[in-house]
Image 1 (cartoon, rainbow, N blue to C red):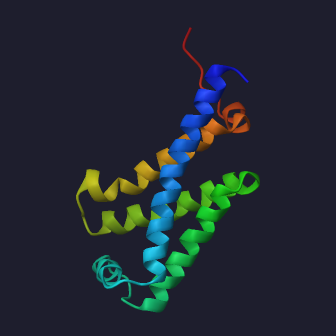
Image 2: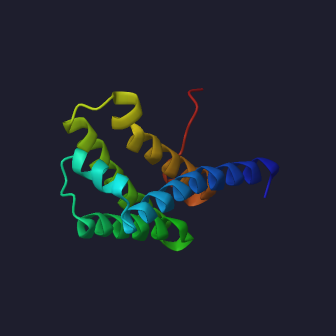
Length: 133
């Protein structure tokens, strides 16, 4: 493995790690479910039910767990992308601020796919980046 390959792989694990840390934090807060989470969920127009919020936490943690395991990382990335899409749609519907709220799920999605792209040569082969020469 070349130095460039190792550097790309390390950067990919760092990017993926940021997403995983955020998702574990978010999922854990939903499992508890804290008062602030119940209020934030209600503000998005969803039921302020602890059961509903725990189910969201379980779903997000399962998707994150799939993303962490190399064998199921692509499935996890697809499911997390769908989960983030729901968050984007929820904030868009409420006309929340674009760059801080609506696009936050897009930022996470770019990090998770970028991390997977950099750490997995099979994804790079599937989605090659070519220069215009």
